[in-house]
Image 1 (cartoon, rainbow, N blue to C red):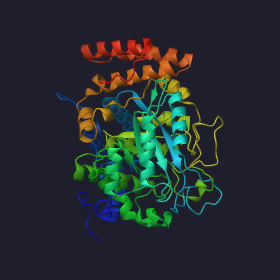
Image 2: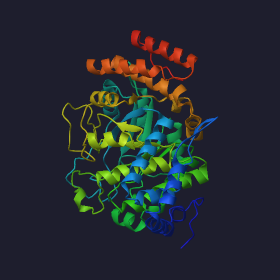
Image 3: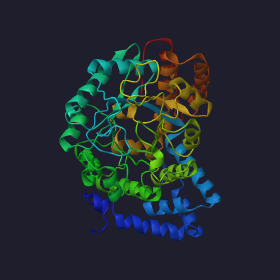
Image 4: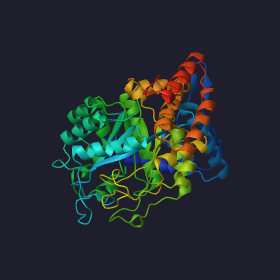
Length: 482
């Protein structure tokens, strides 16, 4: 077997099975080594410098030691540092988005997804451009500004031309004061040429879940279809980067394989992107397998408890401090509430995982990819976030100002979040409150904005933000940004 090499472009060299197994052995041997654990925790803690706040992050081995440790006192310290890091680099902002399912036609045989081609019970549907427009209007009427589009892999029904046409349609829809300002894309691994097309179409982040980094398990879980090629799938982010997309999102589907193996592989992938491209993942998602049309999650024997799930999320925050961590409506309100303080910085709200679901008054289930645990409306999610001290942010400024990839990371590391992202979050929240919110949400929100404006360090920035907020409240002017 080839040696482990984070700078290699070959999947089995940067996600090296031998290195993962050695890491797990090292973690198990040192899980009670308090001296080492203290050193790792001290390394992880954010440090204030003249340039701002810096965080060293952790290697996959260091983070795996923390994950293996069962000492309640250590776990609490992990949680405390995760919250410190989150507040240091992202503040109390939580970015909000919604998934938009375009098509559930798929030729893959993935055994954990109801869209697999052998499923004859699920209704197959593909949105027309008029239906895409209707879905977008429905999402705009809720207050959304950021979408993540989803589609099965099917060259006949969902070719790249269809995806590009949908992106163009989404960006073209302006309804009342609504507009979708950022479209993230979660579609199958593709070619450098197609990634260039997606970049030219103005996408935000390209997201692709690995599902599992364990090659043997991966091949069993993907018995047929293009996705069955482990190397092609795992190397997709390198092709995306080559195609000019510098914001990419990683993720595994926890429950398919042993979580400690997946955790190490996920961090090795992040280290690989940093080593080769100079910038790690823009986001990391932490989905767990859930019930769906013909999918029974109990058929997979690697499920994880809520407590382990929380520890995984916190350890990811310590290891990759500058990345956004996403948790979806797969998880309940209770689970999402706990993970918000452990490093999560993005959540979906008011989500529907069916094709064409937003235009229907009653939540449809016939084309759902998975059961939604948190079925609250967007307004209820916004109100809940604010009641818990989080600023719901609909901001898309960095992407539209060209602050992507290493430029976003520089902004994050420089500690300028309070002078840039914080006022942007407050201005976009004002848009939401003014245009879409219920009265109880408005009251809570405007009280929060008045309080949070005082946290902006620079007087000039604060005064501009205050004036912009007044303009939003008293006119149809929108889309201010720093």
